Image (cartoon, rainbow, N blue to C red; front, side, top):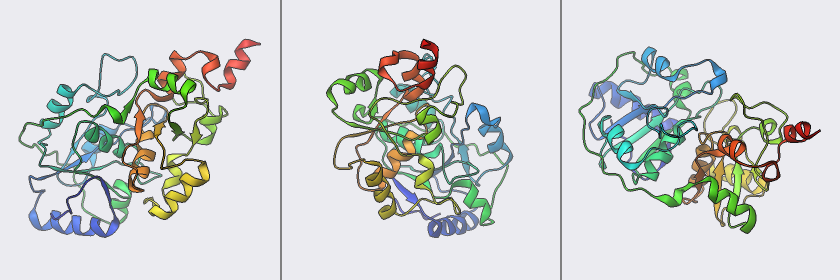
Amino acid sequence: MHVHKTKGEVIHQCSVLSFRKNVDESNGVPKDIRILDSSFHLPSSNRNGRLEYEEKHIPGASYFDIDECCDKSSPYGHMLPDTKHFERYVGNLGIDLSTHVVVYDNSVNYGFFSAPRIWWMFRVFGHETVSVLDGGFMKWCSEGLPTTSEVVHVPKTIFHGLYHPHLVKSYEDIANNLKDNSFQLMDARGEGRFMGTKPEPREGIEPGHIPDSKNLCYQDIVDKESGVMLDVKEIKKLFNETGIDLSKPLVSTCGSGVTACCTAFAAYLCGKEDVSVYDGSWTEWYQRSTPDMRFCPSDKKDSK
């Protein structure tokens, strides 16, 4: 399989056809490339990414489970693991620093959902040669490209990670920013959840947003019909219309740190490579903040 090796990129449809041709001809995936099915679904979806992977996936793909490669001591879901945990997890997937990682997910309505989370995680731990498959598994299947239920077993290797703290923001960082306004904050959730008019998918979490954050829904950076990413010119226009200045410090947030990586990835494609992600996102913020630190309509109802 020939896939152009570069720093984080989106592999577009023209490359997908080359991707297919080389899967067919090589009868597998070369050892310097690892394909990862990173499918993850919201609790309210009644879907299971791992089971769906076992039923059908791109030939040669392994499954990357964000609920396993995480800090299990945290009360919040799929928070970043420590460096040793990440090294062990991806090493068991046959990935080292020479590997070109290609990630995708099987979001039905959009070309990607959770794949950029894995792209971001690799970057956090020092690995830049990671690509996101444009259009995801949905586009792959719509083109009649090969799928399989065969689960591959790859030889383990050693991954040496190097943690990059500038790509991660904590609750304390966001709380301090309410006072000093040192960076912009963008929220990747839909407008209803952001404005508190539609429910959150997690029990016990009310909708709303962090003060002064801008709402750029991750779904808006994808073409609604094809499921592929908008071109860079259109994405830049979206950022501009949302009031986000790509020349200034920027942090991305969402419900639990997944789709925040989609908008961080979009900014990366526009040339802004230093976007941080608030890992705990709204789920953590809602549970730790006080009502004066958030816009949340349910707080007003409770105070009556």
